[in-house]
Length: 455
Ligand SMILES: Cc1cc2nc3c(=O)[nH]c(=O)nc-3n(C[C@H](O)[C@H](O)[C@H](O)COP(=O)(O)OP(=O)(O)OC[C@H]3O[C@@H](n4cnc5c(N)ncnc54)[C@H](O)[C@@H]3O)c2cc1C
Image 1 (tube, rainbow, N blue to C red):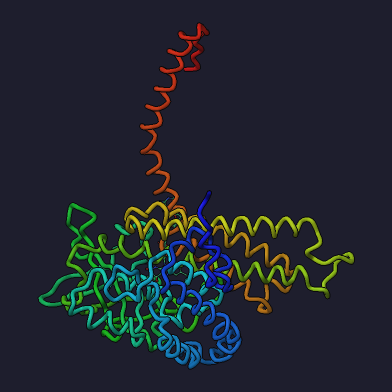
Image 2: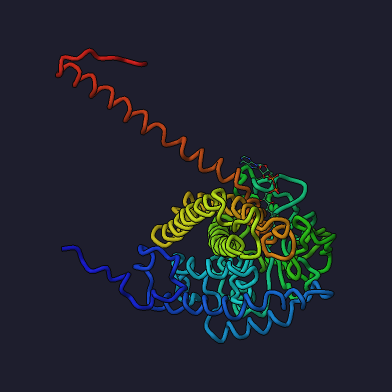
């Protein structure tokens, strides 16, 4: 007799927070995770989504001031133990969830664009906190990591540059010259949060410190640059498909003789690539987790519109047309499949580490934003003309999914990397294929059949 299905019987899983979590994942959830997933669900549904329009209203006319609502919610979320849930349980600073458990929380956060921020689980903070927790000295942690985790400081990640192809980070060219106990930085940077928001405290900057080093993997260094350092000039805020993304924004920067203490170097001179590898895995996967939640929200909106009794072209509900029934089915299918890809990546990171999870992370990064842009676009179409206006959150959702195809590395670069790795496995398949042929030859002789070669 097969064992009783204990996962299904656990009464906690009757809570709607667990509706979309597959049984194999439920089976791995700790009691702490079950409690947190439920709490995140309640938080997003009751404290964030109903306040979406209030957030917009508070930003009107004061684009670069963090709205009072965010401060209020962050204080509350911290008191409820919902801060920093993303930091995996192998860090001593972690609240105790695995990457897989956090995926379930992050999906729920993705249902509201800024919910993650209220829980200090937003980009680039998550990637930066993990970086500092992993690579900083204890002294640096006290100074830079602790305030980030407390939510009293805010950081940006500054790698991309306008003058080079930054998807290949060996090209990064901003000059970082050592002078005594300082580094002097000169050059341009694209992206990293907007300095107009006074809450921004520091940048984690990748610069070229040893251009003559024959080893291109050891020419670069990461350093913490406080925002108030003289010589940093923000040229403009970048808009993304027309959105300014206030109050965090995306700055474009000019560095002119910016002097930073050498004590701010992370891990050591020339070790930026070691750090960059460690940072991008978690950052990438968090975006994908949230995109799944965002797609669920778009899906729900599409169903609402499909069944709106006021909208009856040719006398039928929108959802009564076969084309829309099929659209809904296909979106459901691809969304569920994409979730499995993300959960697999998170589980692989837990079981084998971020390095071994590289391919699974890349798979998520390639698949999820493409899936999300495609289906949010279809949801807009179901909404007709209203779908591309501010009457629905769909255009903002689509923009988020679209930029994640680029942020943390373009999908083409990930496909290139995955494809190259896969090509390396061809040798094994060639050998196996030859073995099939040899065996076929033996069997042809045994059965007295003619051996047919197609080579
Ligand atoms: C909204 C948003 C937020 C961002 N936030 C940050 C941030 O906080 N900090 C930061 O440092 N950067 C940030 N970025 C920048 C982002 O990481 C880079 O834009 C990205 O890594 C690509 O670098 P690039 O723009 O220099 O493009 P390039 O490197 O010039 O690449 C251009 C195109 O070339 C093609 N290509 C590149 N490599 C390959 C390859 N291996 N195989 C096939 N085709 C390839 C792709 O089509 C790619 O899109 C952000 C970007 C966006 C859109």
